Image 1 (cartoon, rainbow, N blue to C red):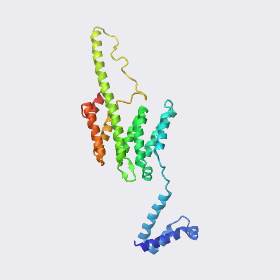
Image 2: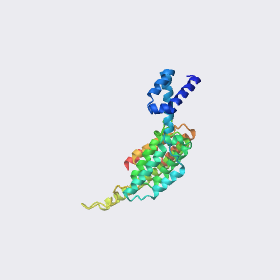
Image 3: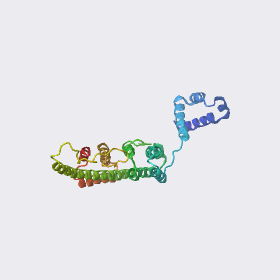
Length: 288
């Protein structure tokens, strides 16, 4: 379609749309308008032109997405920490805060319309894996880490479903995941050492009481812990540990060289400290 034809189409379109007499006669009915344009320029040209105009009009009518600043994230985190977690209403409010933060990180419109959206997502990930995770309940941990998986692997951007694209956010995720896994492995080691001590104690008790029959064992006194929302978050379940390890392994193949190096160095550092491959930790978790 040459430029003169495009110009004529636009002039006719503007006349059909804004002429007061035509608007009174046809109101919102574009069928007669379309037929008029098609009779002059042909159906294909009229179709192509009007389809483009419809997209433009819809884009203009589309509600502007909110501009999320790091200060907005700080307010949400502060609200999360101040909300009373001992009441049902308070716990629901905390979940709303988590939902809001995750929505801001995943919403394609918010991220498309904010040129510095990567800074916002980085601040959200840093808060979720830092201050928020340290002060959350058991079910809130599940919400945070399942949301992290979406950010890493399936965040819908305005370019499509490609996961998190920013190297800045990559590094924030790698650092946060590494910190969580380090805490997890430290707790695993402590539990294994405690279990060895307990087994030694049990053996001694058995030897002392080997002639006693039908008495209650002191060996496991107080060893059973009732599950509740306030129990220690670490060590993590095996499934969660595997997911976090998958994230680190994923970033070993990041499109950004520095992110690849950071992820690989972090993995090697933890393996050196632990004395075994990280994948082996899943079996250790299942044994505890």
